[in-house]
Image (cartoon, rainbow, N blue to C red; front, side, top):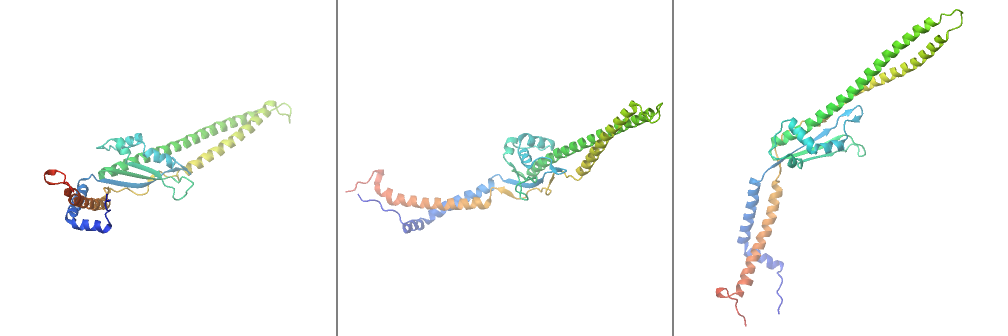
Length: 292
């Protein structure tokens, strides 16, 4: 039995050229489908921006990794949308998959410098901008509250030390008056035991007062340093995106072109196979021809 010959490259080109009208028809149909898809496909817009995490003195208000996780968290997203009165036409769970945040440490590879890149994708440019603003505004509000709470703690501690300083100074003044009164004795040069105890207590309280003054001064310096801290902010004010990122026109057309060329060639080969291999094996009426 003679084995069928394989189709050579020249045979393949000949078949394509012979059936070029059919191949071209398939090519045009597939390309038309690709163009139609671009016309009716839902467009997706993207908005990205860098967030600089605020600092209190020299420490980040929150670690960059934690901030990135928070921005992708369902409860935080819902709270931000509710606070900014953003109404979605989809579920928060579906939106959550379109939000991405990660830490950017290009300045220092081994240390968290507090730069987080936030990316939001949505099918409406205005809503994409509104969602991005809602997330960043909520984060800034929470970080401002953290900084204000830290400042309140410093101020309350400073007030506490000031109150202790005033009370201790009043106690020292009282002991000084008592010691001066106790110096009066019937024998010159001999002090009463009460006077000696008062002087010892005064010395102890003066040491405590000195420590309190130092601590209050340190807290005051901490408070002044805190005023040099900065709040969480965006690298730039986000703008409404004017170009969609999905579907990508070049990618769709390139894919459609490759698919159209392949399908057109396959269609031409199939027609050639039917005309040269299948039809000759069948006679009239659909019966298989008998060969001697």
